[in-house]
Length: 146
Image (tube, rainbow, N blue to C red):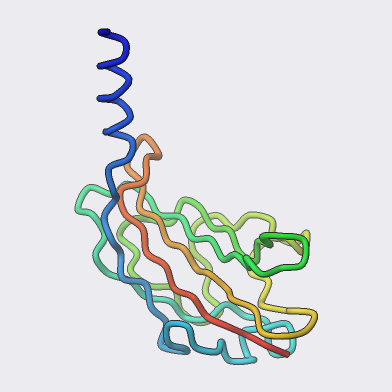
């Protein structure tokens, strides 16, 4: 019975929601088209991003750009870790933190490049504590069609 009680307490702690970060871009609105400039048919540079609502004791941030509509399943366009928690924006074409390898096999940003039709692109910013546990999350979805 003690194990069951402990398991229920731990499970309840794991399902608690995290805080909310407001993530936005001055280049496009929520669920709006991402300008071609930021895609494979344009300059293929990262769009400007800005955020607020970070937890006071956040240690670091991560940023991930994912295409959930890709033919082979989720496709990573940008994966950035170790962004200082004091950062509240990334300028157009800017670099912060450590950029990992994207789904194109290159380090850094790889813009939207759908084969056909309109796809969704999900930017997810996470605030982490010193142990790497998520404290808060923000999401911005843009679309693009060739």
